[in-house]
Length: 254
Image 1 (cartoon, helix red, strand yellow):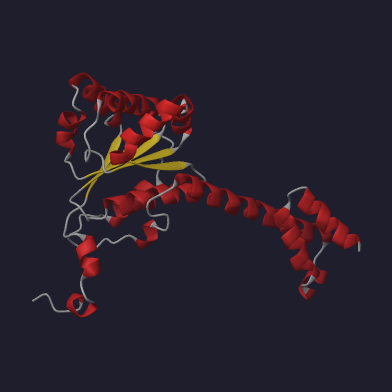
Image 2: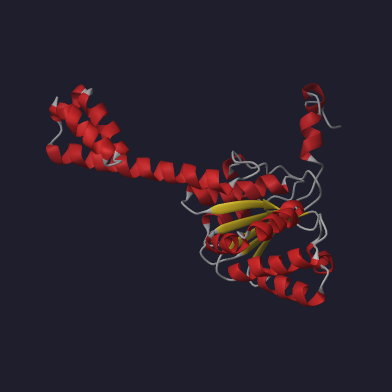
């Protein structure tokens, strides 16, 4: 009876990890051989892990990644794709987030740019960092809605605090005057402070022309290029490969 009360009290205090750990201890015969200090240490450790798992779940949900299950461990680094597994892993495990670096991923359609970008952002969430995914072709509409309902300022502050911002399909849709100005605000808030991932079919040397205003383009690219890591993917579309019948995929290419 007293133990049920203790469990209820732990839950009311939102110590759900400890409550689950205590329940496990009550049903485990091996726990009777442990000291009070050892059992307490296990309960505290269970709570710490539980909170960490819940935080990671929340971060991944809030990131709204296009490919939330993308993981760098599953990265396709076959020859011909332009992916250096060691380089990507070194980047993922490095300090690019703390240092506010940009990761610029370019390559043809279907090369896996968005997947790789999501894998890097997903890994950041697993390390306890916040991330946010935004497709550039929809940015203009997002901005118009937020300006219209008065939430743009709050959203801008939220983005500025986000550890990793992923801008997918950069250069696919033209920017109007308002979107161009807002994009500069977004990038400026992050320069040398927060990390940004960009994916694009458009080669980097054409980004200046895509922005459309020379002054704003200079400002945006100057901030993105301060500290950047470039990944250029190559090879045939992975979407086409996925549609290829298995017997065709297994054929000897010769």
